[in-house]
Image 1 (cartoon, rainbow, N blue to C red):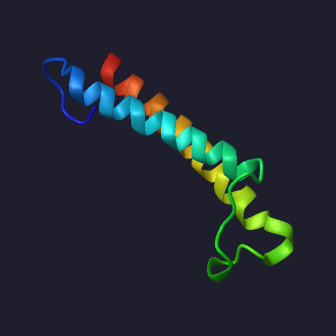
Image 2 (image 1 turned 90 degrees about the vertical axis):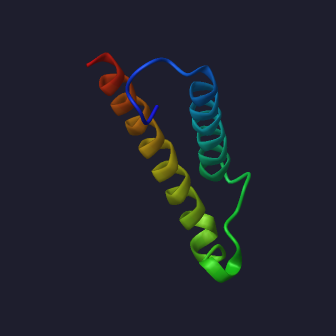
Length: 74
């Protein structure tokens, strides 16, 4: 949803796929299903870095969706 103008179904499907994948990965990180590699600090404090990263992904994805909808409505 980067350009304004006519609706492009392929662009919308690609954007929606990115949102779904981002939410899936963020949820998996927040639920400790996915982990961060140890060289990125994944073994620190029982995986708290993965949980924080997961919530950051979830929150920024939701903010991005809201901003894209506001932009499309204007």
